[in-house]
Image (cartoon, rainbow, N blue to C red; front, side, top):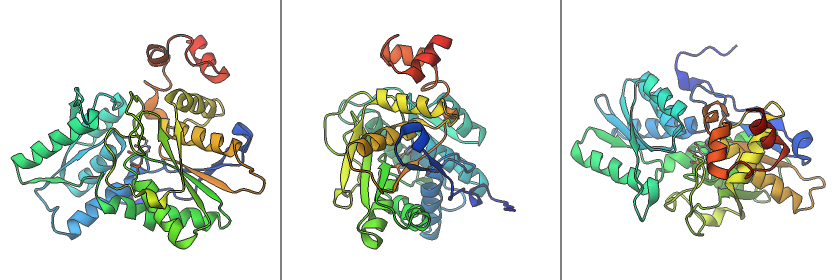
Length: 328
Ligand SMILES: Cc1ncc(COP(=O)(O)O)c(C=O)c1O
């Protein structure tokens, strides 16, 4: 019986969903959403906070500030509340309302950027605001999830070895790329310890992470409008890109089987099943990482009006999604 007194002391690391019956491919989905922050970002958050404490940068009286599309913000809100720090989260209009409310309920201040910059999009505007805040008062401590090596070290230390323990015969690992912390930690570990494992990055169409032109993206978590400083492509074997419409289709397909996952899980599952369909998968062991669960997306990905506004009444034809929209 696990008994904890700090919220970050619990994290389910051993849970996988077998997607064979849903998608027709042998694919094991590692669920990272079962902790009190509700996402994979708990790992990067605790590693970065404790790294800054050890370095003496973060101390009582410090005010944490971070740019986040939501999940890191929730994880830092939880840790800040538990450790007695103030926290300011700088996000933008794509952050789910529920996520914003969650951060505020945990005692954080949330600043929402409403205008993207011409060069750097929303992320550029968020980072400009964080830098200006830091320059205004030296109590502000910016952990900088985009460039902080502790973000990938968290996954090098925990996620990758946990997968390798459960799947000693692993052939291919699919990891979504946001800041690329999860991807870099896992890719470095497997390249060093199990070089035969193929590491496939999954990105959103419209993201500039691996090159390609920027375009509108509405689903938070994966993809960037500024190339992530943590990324070292030499550790990544392959990249697959997923259209947001396919992300949504995959999310709804999972939901229709009773598994409500977040948007980036839809992206990773869509990219992974597409890759598996193009390869000889006999005797292949494949794992994909699901960064969070779906409740925070009830007003977006799982909401009829939001889908209609984005894609029009007939824009997303699949059995799963049309059943949802007709029933509304
Ligand atoms: C829902 C979700 N999925 C995926 C990611 C990407 O993880 P990483 O930043 O480690 O690339 C994030 C990051 O914030 C996220 O919130």
